[in-house]
Image 1 (tube, rainbow, N blue to C red):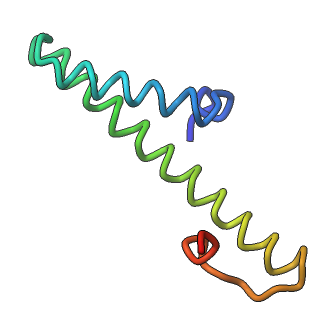
Image 2: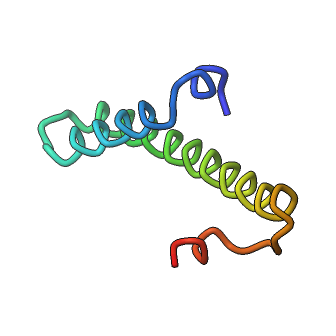
Amino acid sequence: MTKESKKESFESALKKLEDYVSSLESGDKPLEESLEIFEKGVSLAQTLTQRLEEAKQKVEVLIKEGRGFSKKPLADLDS
């Protein structure tokens, strides 16, 4: 993860990714520019996925250690 992406909030980075997708979907960019946007989007998506995984692990640790409950997958917490 780059220093810049660590400083940027998750929500801000997600908005930037949505903007990249919208830009690509419009189809009005030249090929070279579209490829550059696509590469940035893939990199940003990987960073966001990593940040989500880190958050998931923190939630699992808090559940396990903070409250004395057994570790549950994050998806099980919705119900």
